[in-house]
Image 1 (cartoon, rainbow, N blue to C red):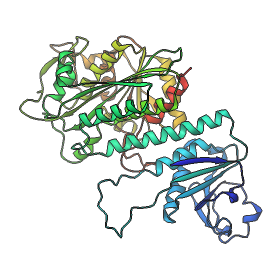
Image 2: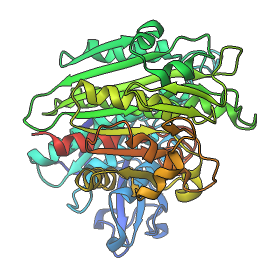
Image 3: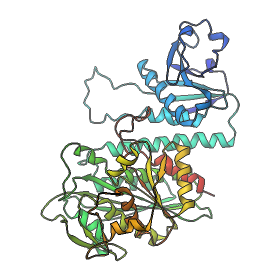
Amino acid sequence: MRVETTTGELAAVEADLHVLPQAEGDELPQALGEAAGAADVKHGFGKTTLLRPGGPERLLVVGLGKREELDDEKLRSAAAIATREAGRYDARSVAWSLADEALSAAAVIEGTILASYRFDRFRSRDEDDPAPVGVEVLTVALGDEADEAMSTAIRTAQVAAEAANRARELQNLPSNVLTPTALAERAEEIAAEHASVSVEVLGRSEIAAKKMGGLVAVSQGSAEDPRLIVLRYSGGGDGATLGLVGKAVTFDTGGISIKPSAGMQDMKMDMSGGAAVLEAVGAIAELGLGLDLIAVIPSTENMPSGTAIKPGDIITQYNGKTVEVNNTDAEGRLILADALAYCVELGAERVVDLATLTGAVLVALGSTYAALISNDDELAGEVAGAGERSGEIVWRLPLHAEYKKLTTGTVADLTNASDKRKAGTIYAGSFLEEFVDGKPWAHLDIAGTAWDIDREYAKRGPTGFGVRLLVDLASALAS
């Protein structure tokens, strides 16, 4: 999508659809007062009214609700509503009036781009049945010339939202297309696009040679080879090196501890954390942010077979700790454990991991918040702040020494699954803490937010959750 800004009047902007946001108490400009439909304008949030003033031909009034309740998330949603309305009129270009300084151009850009995403690459079409029209050009008419801060915010919003849509595309791909090998090829594409990014990909034999017992164990039931993807971004700056780790199980059957068949097709999206990390790195490189970064993405399928890991098996993780595998469907923490330890060994001084890790997080937080677990208050605050600014909000859950009891093994150092049905999300995070060597670390369980969040800009299907949060975090940490 092409994004443009102008300081001219909205009416002077050429576009298929013009959009005028109106909060309660706002009055239409005098020139629109007599336009057809003006008497029908509603100011309640999400209410839309189409006016035909003659010039422009179509003007959509979008209600913002009470001004005191207006925030960036509501603007994202309002922009998404306007984008859907644009589709009704086959509008390829949309222009927004944002002369009101209280209205964030960045939020409107994010909402428009995110709401424009569609997944239709596998649909066949007749020659006389063209693909649906989408918004190709977005113009925001500002009251004044954008200053440096606003220009940066606008560019960041566009790059981050487009990266989130690329992550959504990866999430949507079926597992016979997006294999661990294909995901590694996407990492190689990102590195080829940016001189500041380098990539290393380890295959099955190299992973085994490094004694990454978690990734070896989970992958051994599948005919698809695993991949450990390592991206390095060199952006300079004098801050601590940031480590990002993303779980990328490209299909999760649960292994021998097999999942119920209902809804199993969604387990192609068990690579959502890895997709978010991958595309966030691409966005960070595109923006040229001033920090150094190491990203580690362990990728595999989790399949039942004659070679699959079995409940009761004991493995040795990359850092030497042993684990009783009492549930093969608790596989994400096994591959993340190796990746976290490796990321720290490579030089990460603070680490954030993202994973669709536990079903328990849906029970605890639904699809509104991702769970945040951290051993460091400062890093936790920085992650939570990035979530607030990006709209990808997180809720911090506690760590406590008593939760460690749930991860203690009977005949090994640890177990990957407690026999007690309590604190499932927390003790999974507590398990991961064993592999960060005391470095500041934050874990995001995105199992409830990676898809089907029912927000205006991402109602059903994948969300790309985490991309915009990570880009915002990296922007805040950059120097």
